[in-house]
Image (cartoon, rainbow, N blue to C red; front, side):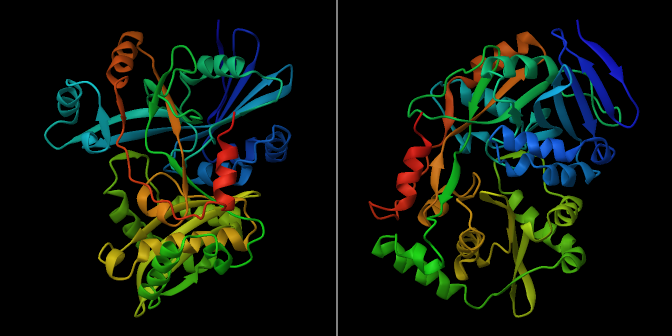
Length: 419
């Protein structure tokens, strides 16, 4: 039997059936309730240097008033054994048929029924992981906790009626993001959870011997180097600079407007970037949260932002004037700037996220398949959704191959996929 001990200020404690104690810390008050030194030390001991689970990331999310985020901890006999980021949000699917392909003829009919006349389908979901990030950032467990035990503890926890400010708890939970190492179909990893596969995460591996952008270009085929030089020429009219904290505060609303122009074109949306999160990120991360702007004739035309962790650079979000995508190659130039940042800061790789797969592959990013897992509170509805999703897969994208055969990135990526 699960016992609940609710405390004020969004702090809830739950005792699971085996005596494991689960602590939920919601919103701004959690910033002072959690011992972040212990939190970060646990990540190091568990060998999980995740940018999106670091204390400074959690604090930046918790401080954002429009993000119902919880820092969740599992303790057994007073010893910390697990932690996670959990967020309640709204998912929106827009014209799903253009982003997935189905092996079953009835899939399109059901999809159109769900999406309605305007082609949109919305539902609330509890997410284990950072909704705006991609990769293995949702949870972390001590080395003595097996995968099966971790999933049992998580399953017992996620449907508990804890939430921020009394908002109704979603009836579906999504766990982000587990790698798919094989070349075959995704498979059920944990009983009772349905695997879903979306676009892969694009990873750009950095050779530790590189010191400059030119070093990166030497690993590319001649044709790819020629394309990059053309992109640099098209984009040379931009004034590109990094914003200070005070400059960022002055133009955050403009950045969000540019971001929305890109966001509105995506086919599946899980949450959204808000101005307050940008500001709290800068306050917590300082120089490790890098916001770069693109100006043309003194007018702001685009921006990009990135988190620099101990081992990797997370290429977070971009926004730009879409008219400049072809004429000035603004998006491709942004990818180059992410690469330059990773080289400059000594990162092992740049995580470029899930969108624009072909363009990212053209600069050397390589795909890693990821799957989310979902579970519904209602077992009958879960069974229906499980059957409904079994026959669909992401639409196959054409990926470029710019690297020479002996390139560092190809070797590292191959090792990453070795079980």
